[in-house]
Structure formats: structure tokens, C-alpha cells
Image (cartoon, rainbow, N blue to C red; front, side, top):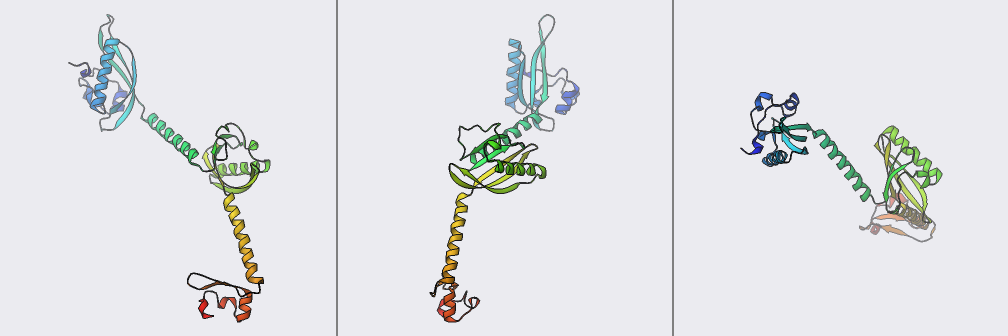
Length: 277
């Protein structure tokens, strides 16, 4: 008979709890139905054979199957039982269900993978910080890849007032459990930058801080306001009949001089087709 076709001689109550088989249902039976697959059963046979020939203690993880069909991972310690004469009498296996640990390890790995992906994907800066201002890690295009932010503080990175402002939002975020958003201005490499900050609770005692550089958008806003003001003054002060239309010829703006010369109020002409005048 192949060595892996050994039968159960004795099981303890914990076996019944793990596999959901009463002792009477397995005693005298082979172990094949306890394994998740024929391959797992064959691996176990090879281990038993190795133990019988080499006599070592084996520690390994294997996939088992409960009576209702659920597969789980068990940490197993196996050894050969010998009598006083050194004759091999059987095989002792101790199985510990480590499904919860496996799931916790998987969840931790997924969480770490997500954190790494976020750190790699962030276009500007992503900071992981404790409420006392200590950085745990940092990533971003304004940071040198050689810079080690671990255990440095916000006071080493930002001016005092900006550091205090950031810590206020960090603590506020942890207190409320809600994201905190604000903007600030900071000088980097001799140039003024506008940054949008979002502080999000990450754990009970740490936050993630997303920093997005909005300098280009702010400069565009300034240029737009300047252009709008120039246009307003042009239409108000220039003694010329100015007007602008949309693609269908409807008036969207006219100068004050235009209204004076034609004798209309502004609300009476805006939206009407230019050809009417």
C-alpha cells in the first residue's frame, strides 16, 4: 500500500472543530478527502514518505477542505512516531487553521500596494504625516528622489506660519474624520507657487496630505481678469461704436458709445441679431 494511503488512528476534538467531521467518521479512513485537490494529497504523500525515510520534522502550509467544501490554508507540523525500539509506528500531523492570518496578510499587502500605487501616481506631492508634523514618507515631482523625508518635520519643509496652518488642518481632519481643503502660497526655487492642499485621515494617528500645484491655473485666472477689465474699460470709455456677436450674429456686448449713438438701452439689444440694427 502506498505510504500516503495511511489511515486515521486517532483525532482530537480540535480536528472535528476545524474540519467539521466527528471522529467516528474518519477513523480507519484515508486522509484524501481532507485535501483541497489531488495534487495537495500527492504532495502530502511525498512528505510522509520523506519523513519515514529521513526522520525529520516537517513544517509547511497546505490547502485543506472542510466537510461542507470550504477550502482553507492550514499550517502543518508533521513528524514520524517511533516506538522505544526505533520502529516507525505512524505519522503525527498538527494542523492550525491560518485562514484569518492569510486574509489579514493579503489585506495588508493590498493596502500597501495601494499606498505604493498612490505614491507613484500622484502628479505633484503626497505626504504621509503624524499629527505632530512628523513625515512618515513623501512622494512628488517637487521632491528629489534622493530626499528622505522619514522622521523629518513640516517645520523643516515649510515656513513657520504655513507649517502651523497645515498642522491645524491635520489635527482638524483627525478630530472630525473629514477631509480638510485649503490653499496657500509658497516660494520654491525662487518662484512663487500656489498650492491646493487636501488633508485626509489615514489612520487613528496619521493623515495623507495631497498637494497639487495650481500655479498655472492661478496665473491664467489673473490674465483672464486683466483681459476682462481691459475689455470692460474698452467698451465703457472708447468713443467708438464697438460690438461683439456670437456665431449666429446675436449681440453679446456693445460699447456705451454704440448705445448712445443709436439710442438704445443695453438690455434692449443684447441677444438680438446684429442685422436688426
